[in-house]
Amino acid sequence: MIKLFRNISQNLLVGGETNKYFKYAIGEIIHIAITQKYNLNLNATTYPSPLGRG
Image (cartoon, rainbow, N blue to C red; front, top):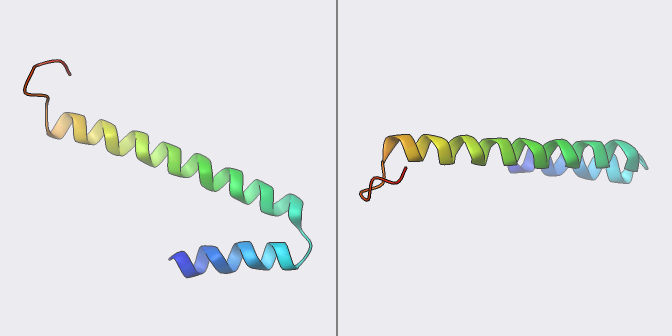
């Protein structure tokens, strides 16, 4: 999967399409942020705090 994303980013940069590359990079960052937030929420509901604070 990493090879696929690396190939996409390299093809966009080599092809001189920096505008598309920046849109791709921002989309990837947003995707990672949403995924991390989801995983933290899932972890909090699966393993509740032993102190009862969330």
